[in-house]
Length: 103
Image (cartoon, rainbow, N blue to C red):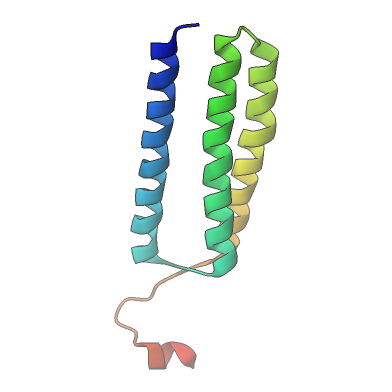
């Protein structure tokens, strides 16, 4: 097992994590998140990064079936978290003050 390849993979996973957080911050300008949505999105992002790490490390060890099962379980759980989080998001209305939102 080549250690340079493993370091590169986990560097890319860190980059993907930062990219995911940047996308969440961009979505915050368009959508209003409730607390459950934020928790589900961060949980889903963590599960997705873990699923990729699991699959890559399993493939490096020539465990193809473990990689597939890891993507199915952890990646599927991440997709479920993301889809449930969309139910707790509302689109921000442009030009509406906070006093008008209360009504």
